[in-house]
Image 1 (cartoon, rainbow, N blue to C red):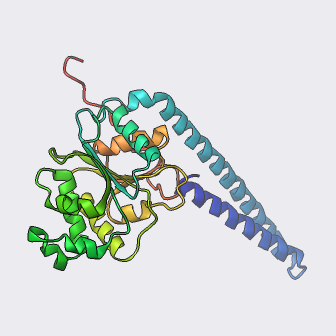
Image 2 (image 1 turned 180 degrees about the vertical axis):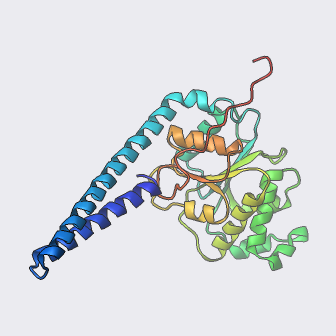
Image 3 (image 1 turned 90 degrees about the vertical axis):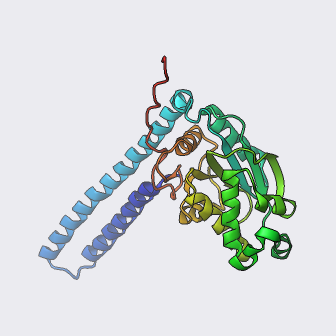
Length: 292
């Protein structure tokens, strides 16, 4: 899998090859004079040169991608060390808290110097709207009229701020299937992983509010998945303003996650076509430690 630039180069090569085929077919049809045949021959030669250049560009790009991944793999310990020193990171699963991707996330933040995740919540989907509505009493009653997207935004705020969390307190019995950690402290960043199928209807509305609320918060939130995910959530996350990493199971993906959590600009990173910003964000040097 490669990013958008590779696919653009591949498509360009295909179109050039088609044009060559068309021109050769016209030239062989016998319906053109010598001058036109000469012009067509010149066009074919030019397109052949472009095709060779496109093929060479794809080969160079593939080598460049491999070189970057090899560099990151070899330099990973030095590049990621202390990127998240002292940071408190929360993890949110949409669906089961699957062991594999959970380990990838926890490894990334641990390698970057963060402590154990400050909290983890796995949200059950699709949500039972009637059951959720029945829990919206007292100060939460306003969300019956405000809508599920606004409820999602409120839960996003509480997930980050911690402290008093009436939304999570009321809805955990009907909305959460697994949890770890408390809401005592604020979070400095959030990592989201979707292990469930894409959702529709009211659940989709709720999740969009949740994602948008996290995107609007003053701390970074990054949506992550593993390489080759066939039900990718990158499009949904990007549409709601979140950064994404599509290969958190690889050293480059874990480094990209740490860099984004430490404050790199919002973007989509990884190896799939949707990763329009490259494999990893720009690597800024860490501040020199006192006495270092």
